[in-house]
Image 1 (cartoon, rainbow, N blue to C red):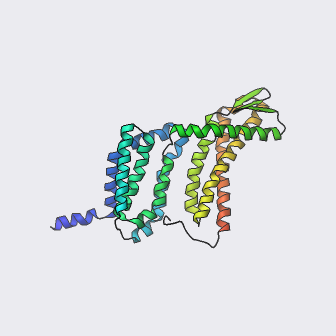
Image 2: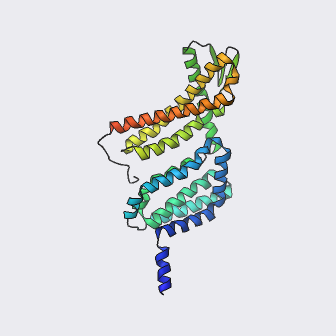
Image 3: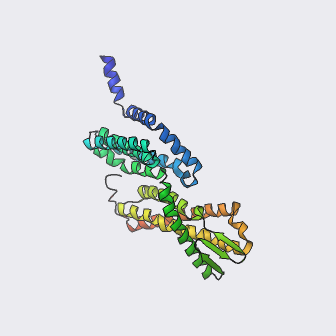
Length: 292
């Protein structure tokens, strides 16, 4: 009896419960997790995917004192959410629909937390769990439906800026014709890759640095014009250099290095915007609704 009681107390430890649930999820979703990691390696659009779980874990770690203070309870809604996630996983596996399979993992995780630990704890870790959606590649039908309009927008804006600088340029769709050279704004130059990475970064910055929910939303939304503007800046610099030195500057190391510099500039812009928002709400600390 003492052995059983000791085993029961051991199994009630939060660390043991987390490890047990983690192993069960890994067993069920091992193929999904392996394929997800493979996509992070081969798809440059989601190379930031490796960082998302780490950032999510850090967000939860920051709430460790609050988590320890909460009294666990149970919620029937969590069981419904858990079963819904498992149903999603089953249907998506039969249909070989990868996005839904991966998304179901987040639903199952949320359902487990809500069912086993209750609404208070679920509310505390809600944002870190939702944040994991940034690690899941969107379906390519969605990706390309957004990518091409961004190509046209970037081409149009770049042509306008270059023309204002007095450099002759003619635009035809996503093709930019300069004196002696022609540039094409392809999928990789649409800015969508930067937008995906920057929006993930902005969401983390909003949660970790902003005092109010509204300020966090504004910082996250700011990632869209910042990413688009940074991409137009990169294309403008490339067009100027190409008009001076030929199209070879639009390829190779210089082109890649300019992408790194412009992305760093975009991060600085986000930090600047975040600082302004913190200053505007200084003295206010209404917090994030049940998630912070």
